[in-house]
Amino acid sequence: MLYSKEQVQKRIVLLIAVISAALLGWLLLYSEDADIFLACDTIEDKIERYVCYKDAALSAIQHGKSVEELFGFIVESPGTRHLKEHAVGRAALIVSNYNLYEAKNMCRQNCTGAYYHAMAEEWGEYAPRQLDELVAFLESFCKFEEPGGEECYHHVGHFYMSSNKNFKESMSYCDNTLENDARFSECVYGVVHEQLIQSGAENFFELCLGLSGRARRVCYTRGSLTYPKWLDDKLKMYKNPLEICHVLNAKIPLEFNHCYASAAWVLQNIGKTPDPAWCKETNVPLRELCIKGLELPEPYWGDSASCGVETDEGEASACGLQI
Image 1 (cartoon, rainbow, N blue to C red):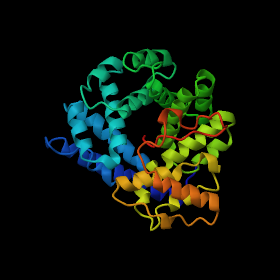
Image 2 (cartoon, one colour; image 1 turned 135 degrees about the horizontal axis):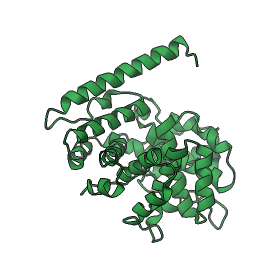
Image 3 (cartoon, helix red, strand yellow; image 1 turned 45 degrees about the vertical axis):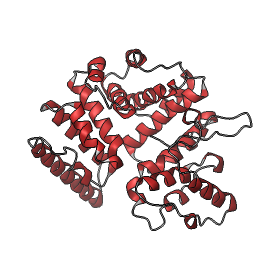
């Protein structure tokens, strides 16, 4: 495969950034109180930044730092918290020689969903045909069948997408194995999240076009919720931060579009007050959707577990906004 001059230059720049961050991270290991993720935070591309977080976390644990020490660094940087927690969970599984239970025990407190998402993600890479073993492990602490246990299926969604690297097939696995809509929605959420981690947000919604039924509906719903969170860095750059959602309106059916509510929540978390004047859509339903979203910038908008699930009226239910 031949690359253009521009592509080669971009790859060289990214490589230099990753190597520089890795070297600085290696040096920081020898300073007991140094934040081992600090160098990675300077990398603009989010996928490359996550690669750096993974390398930094793995190197730190291999050199004697504990999971709790790494979580101590993460608390100080809420804007990048989730991917760092992913990186720590992955590193723990690798250092434990892929012993799921030992990796779990390495995290004695402050354990988060992201820690286990990453274990499922890395297990998909290491043992792509051993879903039963992963599920048995998750069942030791994650109550699949009990109320509130739907998030357990989010981990499984990460595994599906990590193990086969095919979005449509992963969605089909969720669809074919989970009759319960709430559990299906959480499984899809994991697939969507892993797709963004692997490939970024560009052209994501074209993937939803190739789906049908509830898979298509939840793909748009979960995708529009996650999109502003994934692009939170770019939200800071726009004069009108809602531009990030305006460009999606032609790609997402109105009834499945939760981008504005999600963006409003992200903006509040970075210290910006959502402004209704940003809702400049000339289309009245879209403008109303925008204003409603800004009025409800909550971490949870409705019941997270039922996100995108069809109601008795035939509409998609409200969603939670937290990743």
